[in-house]
Length: 629
Figure (cartoon, rainbow, N blue to C red):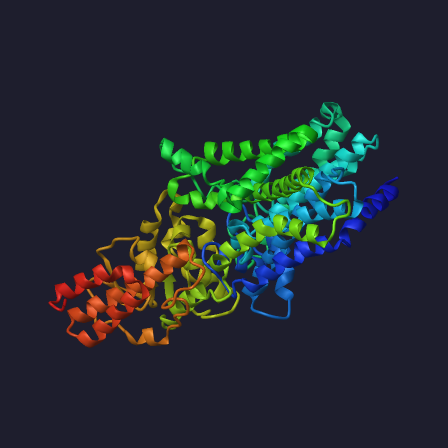
């Protein structure tokens, strides 16, 4: 019986696998993503995910083991650097997600016919699915995620497969053939996808409704419920990777989850305590707007999705209800329960990728029914000739082509070396055997990648200040903290700045101590004074002489994307450019103060070229030294 089911299952998928429209639904997005792929490490979590994938370690809580194991085989490709290969892994998973949009659209429209002519009817359905897949592929959110290492496209693909299997199960069930294996496969995938991102739980109500609206008595089947739960736990067991791998002390072992207590601390994200804060109407509305269909698909796409919901309400109400339940659940939890602060709302925008995938399916369905309405009203010949096919093609693909044209420039990262250069420039500034303390994730993670994966400046230690309050992190850097007094203190009860002062005091007499730009402007200290050296700062005791800044380091810097405008400019990339400008401004100010006007003016000129909006600051510096024109 089991063999017979397996044969029928794979045979049912075979015709779709050789569909040329299906191939295009994958190949076109993949080609676009490869053309715009980031060539190396980027900001935000990129450097950390790259290092964790390469070393098969553990990323930030809750670890993301499924994404890391998925990306690892791409590091074996024989071309490009490691970052490029893992970025390619995300482009591949995004293309799979686009392909799944096509399959879902076809499955929902399987029994729909708008004309009697079989060939044209098949074209109308498949072209609608392809248009939906391409529209999803060129949305700003998915495209942004596809160009560098992100787990969300992989999660979106898995959730689409679950919806597809549930629709297949529903079809067989309504035809009198029970196939519980489809449901078991869904629960297994749902449990496994928790290791890609925990937001998958927000789709559980949608999947549950698809089942109970088919037959509410399914909830009374105890045996099937137990088996479904067992398969979910089996899928969830992929998390065992985290404690097992932690015992091997990989290069990046966030949380060190080798014990049960530390694993639960890691899995439950205890390292990110949320501070309670009030919420007013403007904050609530900003949280709601994080799910923004018009931004992703334009208002036309939103109207097509509404048209699809109306049509589905008449024919396949359970699908419409499942989608609406997903939207309500996501907004209730992400916007309602999480109460995300305004400055981090942009992070929650990533979580809605599976909903945007389902919205793209609705857009394909809406296009199909819009065509049916147009054909019903138009006077067309009995046989549809080439002109009709061309008109339908223009109608279907106007939206994805327009989205591609609008979003291409802003998502083209093929020459985005800013994070890579920022990190290499920082490392070039450091003498041998330096310890440099970092603060912000975006400034630290590219350094981790360069040192851990590309083996650059392995003589340097790079403690991350916000992590100094965790015992597991101190244990992971024995060269720095083996004999530190921090290991004998309750660091979790301390703030990172206090830990940093202790660490600097312990190290400053033994080796060169540096801090990065973010640390420089995140702490205050009367005991230690920062001395600028390019993008970084050497720490000296306040009793020591200051000396002159070393400006020769600027000559060794790569400045790709700094002086010229690049197409891609996210929040942290823009911040890095401002750091360059501020660093030049600060160097120029100091050089003018010690009577070196030629060099000082060169620094100020560079600051103005990098960031023209800093001209008022430059004028203030010049006025201070009587040099303003």
